[in-house]
Image 1 (tube, rainbow, N blue to C red):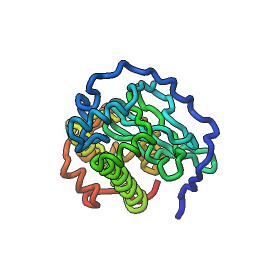
Image 2 (cartoon, rainbow, N blue to C red):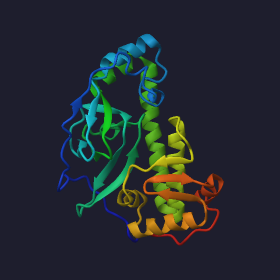
Image 3 (cartoon, one colour):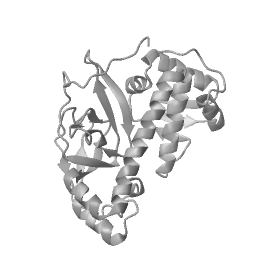
Image 4 (cartoon, helix red, strand yellow):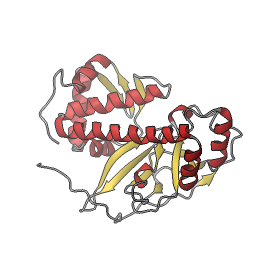
Length: 265
C-alpha cells in the first residue's frame, strides 16, 4: 500500500527522559473517591474487596509533561491507572520515526501492551502534568485469581483497547482525511461523555503534529481538514479548544455521508 509505514520494535534512537516521579500522599479511599474509578480496575468489586485492591495500589505518582512513564523494551512491572492528565503512546519505525498509536485519558490503564511479552512495545509520554496509580502486575494476577470480578474488569480493559485499535485500523484503511478527523473527534467526544464531561466542548491535549501522526496524515492535511469542517459549520477550534457545533453532521461525515475530500495523506 503506498505510504504504508513499516513498524518494527526497536530501541528508541533518542529515548525521552524517564520520569522522575513525585510520589504523592496516599488518599484514605483513593479508589472509592476517584471520579473515573468506574472505568478502571476496581469495577464491580464490593467495598471490602475494593479495600483489598486499594491496599494493592501504590502511592500516586506525578509525571511531568514530556516525561516517559515507560519506554519500549522496558520490562513489565506495573500497570498504571491514569487518575488525571493525559498520555500518548508511540512506536518507532525502522527509520527511527515516532508514530503515535494511542491517546490516553483519565480512567484508562497503561501498560497492557506488555502483558504478552512482559516487555513494553511502545513509549508512553505525558502530554501534560499527570497522575497515575501504579498497580504491581504480579500481585494483580494473584488478586484476580481470588476475585473473579477483578479478572473480568481486566479482561474488559484489554477488550476495550482491542476494539479501539480495530477502529483505528479501519479508519486508516478506508476513510478520507476529513472522515478520519471526524471519527477522531467523535471518538474523543464519546470518551469525554463516559467520564462525565461535555460531548460538545473539550480540550485537545495533543499537538497538531501528534494528531496528524495518529491519523496517518500530513500536518498540512490536518490543517486543511480542520478549516474545511469549520467552513461547513460543523466544528470550531480555538487553539486547542474544540467546539462541536453540529454533532449529527459530524457523525454523518464519520459514517461516509456529507462532503469529503479524496483519500490519502
